[in-house]
Amino acid sequence: MTEKKTLRFGLAGFPVGHSVSPELHRRLFEVKRVQAEYRLFEIPPDRLAEKADFLLSLDGCNITIPHKQAIIPFLNGLSKEARCFGAVNTLHGGQGFNTDVAGFARSLSMLCGGSLPQRALVLGAGGTASMMIGYLLSKGVSVTVSVRSPKSASVKALTERYGGQVPVQPLDSISGGFPLVCNATPCGMYPKSDAAPLSEQALSGVQFLFDAIYNPGKTLLARRAEALGARTLCGMTMLVYQAAAAEELWLGTTFSEVELAPVIREMELLTAAKYEAAGRHVLLSGFMGSGKSFYGRRLAGSLGLPFVDSDEEIVAAAGMPVPDIFAAKGEEGFRRLEQETVLKLLARSERSVLALGGGALHYGDNAQRFRKHGYLVFVDTPFETCLSRIKGDKNRPNAAGDVRTLYDRRLPLYRQSADYCFKP
Ligand code: NAP
Image (cartoon, rainbow, N blue to C red; front, side, top):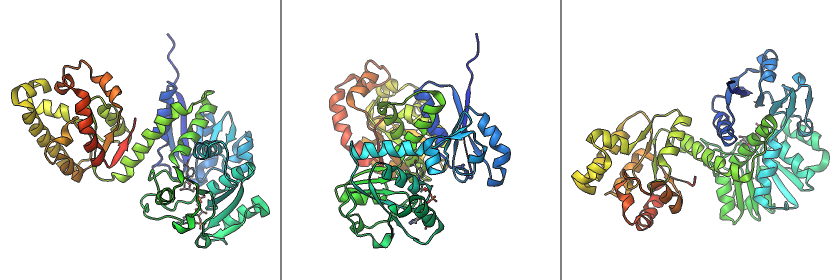
């Protein structure tokens, strides 16, 4: 029997340590059941020339800052998009591609539906802004650019690229009236997530807002636009779609929206747990069969943290399975043991991802106490899915009763106490 070959992919940039690309691509490979590895290659600018052959020898590679332009002389050719934007983010077969455009285009079509508004405001003048402007102009949208420093070299480059087609205005002079606003600045990105490039007043009249930032999952700018009644979309969708477009090239496959939607949601959960939960334990709450252990294990793996299943800890501490604890001590006795076990785990200084029992939050003041030490994620799985997973499970004493009533009774507290609601 011949062994299946592991395909080799990666991301080259400098620095790349904080990239979520390995996790994202791993999930996409999983969707297509492809055996592949995706590694990070930290290559300083002065070493790109000596590493270029290696990067081209891989089955596929992503390229990020500062190599998006510098890689071009080492390639056999460029795709139309890479040539048009003068930037490469994907290598395949010796050629350079730019899949950010596909990521942006698919995000905009999800946000705005079939037709784009006639006028748009793009914030920023870097590589991403330039790509957005080029795409919007190609779709017949009239674009205004807004920046904090109108005399910068990047504004000059942008003006040269697009000639007189794009008026440039300082950010503090914007007074609204743009139905579509696209943010391509890092303003509002974690840890400075209480900043936004535009005030509510400058957003007046906005109908659609796209923010390229994906961490936090919803920026202050997006929240401001939503308060004005706009539809918004933040950057994780673009990030996932550009990664999927790269894999479509590498693997000769296509990804559907249905396949990508859960990847986007899981990647949003990962960034929330990585940045918003910073320093705290991550606790997963939710009904029996909601997938707390499954997603908890994956999240722990991605975050490089230990995973703990509170039921397993209780069973180990009591020296008997859950149904026996219920039989010996009643549900009240089990809940007390559960409270004690979880509080002990939360008191540990080493962070962990912890899956709670389905009724853990509903005992005494557990919800408040657990939240003090942990970032609470509610795994919001529909009742029917939970039911199909727990039916006939002898290890779950509460699965034998009226589970629908129990689900309805527990749902409000899961929601109210959650720092983050994750719909698998
Ligand atoms: P870039 O080339 O460094 O350009 C950044 C632009 O933002 C510059 O015009 C810069 O202006 C401006 N800017 C920086 N800080 C600002 C602030 N505090 N207030 C107002 N303007 C500010 O970066 P880029 O590669 O285009 O990326 C821009 C953003 O898009 C980043 O947040 C990045 O994470 C995000 N992005 C997301 C995706 C995705 O898939 N979701 C893909 C690519 C990029 P100055 O010249 O004045 O500094």
